[in-house]
Image 1 (cartoon, one colour):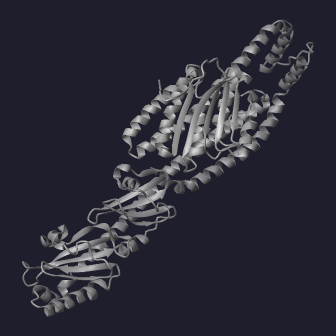
Image 2: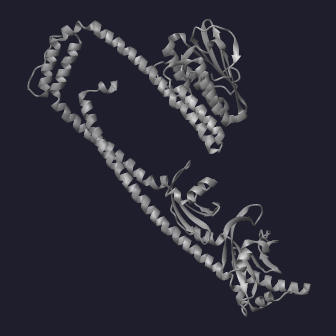
Image 3: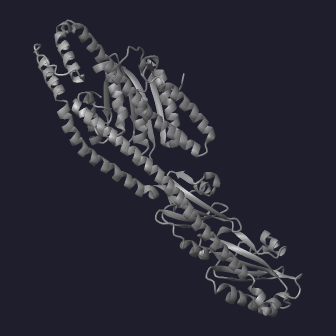
Length: 608
């Protein structure tokens, strides 16, 4: 803000005009962008819905063809005559098998490549022709299956829901089945058996492969168990069960959000087939042309403003020349010449300003007498600025820690560990209660309680990969230190010692008294800090006026720099901040002046 105040009036006028023009252009551009994006989304959804409905109609037609395929036994009198008889000898059984299975191979299977297995069965015999090394799952107990009993009770064809079965090797293949009862042509009351056709999704896949959803779109087919039977396009190749269920659910709406991004979803349910067609478009890919057009519009506006700024500068220089003369006289007054006076040429705003300037020069002598009072006010302003800097550093550290703690609780909830999550919420509540007083001094006992609550939350995530100990001087627990002095150091130890590796990590918090100073140490057995990173951190510590992250170093150093600057603001050069990474792991030590007594070290295990 101070740099803006130092700008010349001409610069401010030009900047204000350019800003207003830019704001109008940006508002209009973004308004058009959102309007066109809504129009494009609606148009895409409408066209996509028509496409998948047509694909669903083609799939229904394909299923009806399979229904008609199960009627072909009625066109072979020899087959029907064979099914009406009961074999009385092994030779007759062999002859019946040759007739039936020959028909299944030549008529029902070979002409259609998607047919995997065909069966004709009744209560006494089972005939089959398969192209796979695996029979149907109910091969040995088909008489007890629901679909067999259902087929025997109705003359309508039955479509078994899509499912995944072993067909070739150990991989599961999506298949579906058509079942129909066979009756005698001479006496419709006589049931000859049941025909069952198992088919893969080659026919349906061929239909779906012809669907063109443009770039960035994917077509999926899922069954009633939310298993993916077909997918096309490179948009959504891998989905977990929860995401597939959310995509298929109409309650999800037309927009789906996941960790991968935002998607537009069209659904078409084929209840008779037991499948759902899903057309998914990437919202980002769909909006990319509009976003590129928006960027071009803004760039064009910036170019136009540069031209306009040049014209405005010329006009302002002509109209504000008297004002600039007054400014030149002001510089003379600043140099000590109190005899100068501005010439009043008019009675407009600039003339009024010239008169005021002359009055100001005349009253400048009396203002010198108030130097002492003004000096005191400047001292007070510097003190308030220092206090504001301290409060700003405190406020910067809050979201840095909260993000990591909330991320741990989120992982617990997603894993279904609700009882542990309740405990974690209690720990978080305790932690939040501690950071509410982040701008105040708290007891070392309270600070360690906050650290233990944080470590309990983090330990739930890493389990036996993370252990910790807290050993403090018993007589120092009631001494006060700035809030959140140790917790960010522990957080950095977790992030850089435990998170990037699988070995067990130990974190230790210790304290001791050295020459009337309190020494607090946070130690880990991690890989340590690289020399380059450590050098950047130390260089930033030597620049007290630089803000967090101003050194261009790792974002993980933000917590360290904030603690260091808070301690320096609070205790001045009496505070010390040391980082030792020469051996295995890292040890961060703090030294602050605290008048504590006692030398007894105890294991800290109580929240008090």
